[in-house]
Length: 302
Image (cartoon, rainbow, N blue to C red):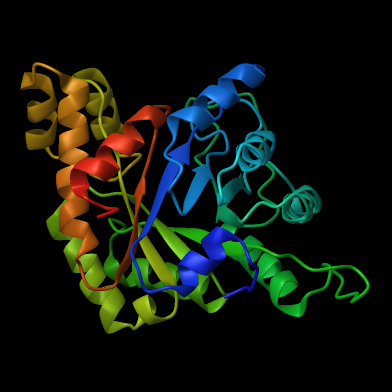
């Protein structure tokens, strides 16, 4: 793993459970909104993962990540979607992020722009997520710029990628994982887990292949906040399969948001002791204030 001295790097090098949470930048150009998000997130996280326009045009993930770092959070990971930038912009932003103290980059393809994000936009797709991971890892390991000039400092970053536990057939899933791990992903962040049985099957394959020994696998949970949101996500399958029983629990609850936290915490409890899991990530989906409740209820910091 790339060797920088930030808190997330030290956490990756430890043997304890990692605890991270997501941040969705505000939709407007309001600095106070970023400060409000920062205040709502727990201070004892190993890292905050800042989303990069996952479902619509929002404020800059780069600027939000820098602001979170300057507000005192010890680890900040910047998500970067290859959908929106060519390799010049991707690598330039990654070098800028490293220079400004960002802890890591989460390399991802990003949802297709036609899925409600901005159908009129043209995608770049110059790098795919594997190529992007490989380029950043090379710059981190060689301690040099993209053109291997030692006079240009390399990246002081942890490099991560996305894992899709519910992708089938399993052979294709393993092939994608092999590529991301082979090019040097320091950590893998999974889709939100709701179907424990299918996730356990995936983890069995992951352990059999020895992937859990080569990278840190961080499993994600997502607190659902309303029956309407649960049904939308269930239909889209954006965060993996969501069972009818989960939707019914949210729908029948007197306080759907509180029940969503409880469901996420219950899943986190089952995941945290699963062999091969190095950490738990609480996806925010714009509800950063719920991360602390999930972490406390699941006893992730006990």
